[in-house]
Image 1 (cartoon, one colour):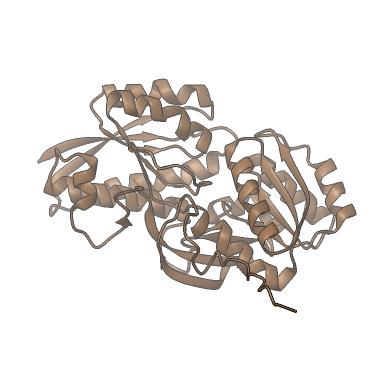
Image 2: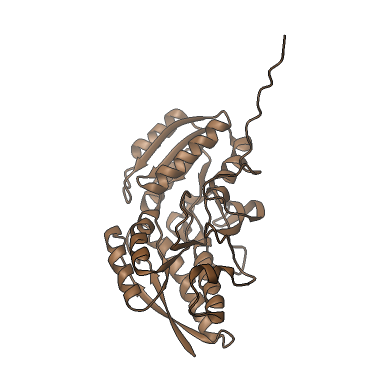
Length: 345
């Protein structure tokens, strides 16, 4: 049986460890299932490294994985860490399978994106929210590329809908001093809050909003079941968008599901051609993920769900939404404004 090394690059400590652990669990479960199935004819050998939430540790640890013989790596949670290792991947010929939602506007030859991009989370979420809550938004975010770019796109969508951005506020990653942000929300009374904070900052913010009894709809594109235990009752009524929310049996969250899907997609194709380059792997047939060979992004469902009774309940769903990482298409989620006709007197 052919043994193929597969890199895993997830932080098991730090501000966003719950997301990392969910991704890691999905990848390890996929490896276990592949190795237990003789139909694959191969054995995946995990090569793990733990950056501990330190962004500077990602490139050297990624290099260690690739130097150990793995060509493919499932890993990274933040866009900051993903962008940090792309030069290493380019230099050493590695491929990253990225299992987290991100802000779009990237299509690396060395990365396959198995979670959602903005036309599969942020755009439909805001279009769904406007008629229900209004168009006056308060934007929050962790102070790095995820927060910056998500709020930039949100500003464009709110402006296109003739809405108002009342404020745009950021916290350093891991910062839990949310008092000023919450006080400003109490004063401005927005129709909704877009929460692009991550990890401990997000937990502190949601807890403070609940303690202050500020009943403002809170929207998110990156909060899933894996973080509900950290939030407790503070998660109630939270609205989130993603490709998957758990309903009975199945993966614990979309992070786990995306990492698991990446492992299965890769294993099925390596079983056909273990030496295939990425463009060949993406062109091989299969009945699992549909990956766009041009942008390396997945076609995914879009699901909007709300926390009710400590679990996400689906509010709306669209099946098989093609990726549009650069928001280049005006589709059903990005309708152009009606043009004013010039009428002669």
